[in-house]
Structures are given as C-alpha cells and as structure tokens.
Image (tube, helix red, strand yellow):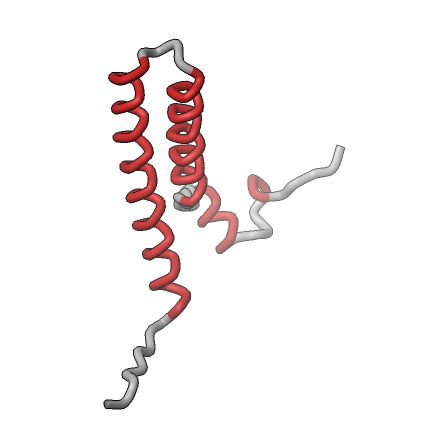
Length: 90
C-alpha cells in the first residue's frame, strides 16, 4: 500500500484551521473554567488562572479577525491626490 499525498492551498487552509483550532481551544477552556468554578468556587487560584486563559484566548481570537477597510480608506486608495486624503506632518 502506498502513502497518499494530499495537496492544498496552505494560505487559506492554514488560516481557517488556525481559527477553528482557536475556537475549539476557547470553547474547551471556557468549559474547563466553568467546571473549576463549580468545583472550587470563585476564590480559587486555579479558577482565576482558568478564566485568565479564557480571556487570553478570546483576545487572540479577536486579534485574528481583520477589519474591513472603511469606505473612506477605499476612496483614498483610489484617489491618493484628493485633498481630504493627504496626510500632513506637523
């Protein structure tokens, strides 16, 4: 039996896999933090660390989402010489 080779576009697939992996990790961390809170109460050090992990994963997830350029940014990209698009050094 010969090994099978799978080829894919690494740019697109890697970003989707990373996002899915981050979502899965965030969901698992959230459930873990909830279970620890139920078991040990809100004053536990383990619980605080678990919820901090949830916050860090949520921040990482938000950091990966790219914002679409505004209409003004698109206008300035198409019309760099327009007076309203000029940037002045003060």
